Image 1 (cartoon, rainbow, N blue to C red):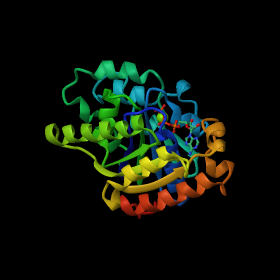
Image 2: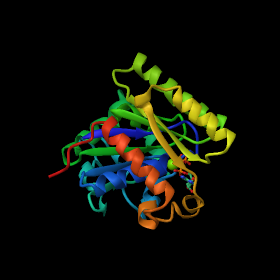
Image 3: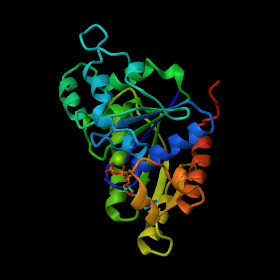
Image 4: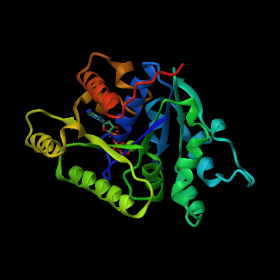
Amino acid sequence: MITVAIAAEKGGVGKTTTATHLAYLAAQQGRKVLLVDMDTQGQSGGFLNVNGKNLPGMYEALAFHDEFKRGYTPMKDLVQKEVRPNLDILPTSPALGEAELIIASVPNRERILLDRLAEIKSGYDLCIMDVGPSTNLSSLLALYAADWLLIPTSPGLASRQGVEGVLSRVDVMTRRLDRAPKVAGILATMIREKEIATRELLKYQRSFPEEQRAGKVHHAAEMERELGKGQTIFELNADSIPARDYQQVFKWFCDRVALSGVAK
Ligand SMILES: Nc1ncnc2c1ncn2[C@@H]1O[C@H](COP(=O)(O)OP(=O)(O)OP(=O)(O)O)[C@@H](O)[C@H]1O
Ligand SMILES: [Mg+2]
């Protein structure tokens, strides 16, 4: 199982959109995919019509992680199966914040998600983690568990600072911990071709090595209006510009993270 965190230390830059859309495309092509929601907002479920608030999920996975203690539930029982063909989701809810408090003083707490995912990794080709914008323990757990990091960023200086924020966190992990994700790339989201802010963003993207340029996704009113209501853009309008953009990004993604295996 290849594990990819979609993260940026800035809200509203397209992390959940990117996580759900790449997960959907990989699943549609026959890979077995697990989408993990590591954001207390619990929005990736909503993007696929799964209401994480009423379901067991990441809270139980973290708070009751110890198989020798009461309350432990195997990971396979916390996963919502086949929310789309080949696509499972481990949902979350605002209770994730409480789980952070429960595990805050557990030795080697940064390993907990990595270890829990190991329970089920033989069942999946790909695990995509939707990470929240905050610099909290949940996002550390996700980055620690990830092999790769993909960073979405929309036009505007604050979004680029969100890229720099997560990159410096990865630097600190590299120096202080025994694991840190490899930077897969920087994805330009919600771009409007003629705007200066977009030109600046694309210039910033070009400052990264070529293999880390994940491509671009155009802004579309349809995405702004419809996402979060339970369907991906591929289900809403597969011919739309952002749908085609995400197909391109997906091609880059498969090459970059060497996602070739198709589940039997
Ligand atoms: N290409 C696009 N064009 C227009 N709107 C978009 C596009 N992609 C996403 N959006 C809109 O922007 C909103 C924010 O996107 P998304 O939820 O993916 O960001 P996020 O980084 O996960 O935010 P948060 O930090 O709150 O988790 C979405 O609800 C959607 O309405
Ligand atoms: Mg999000």
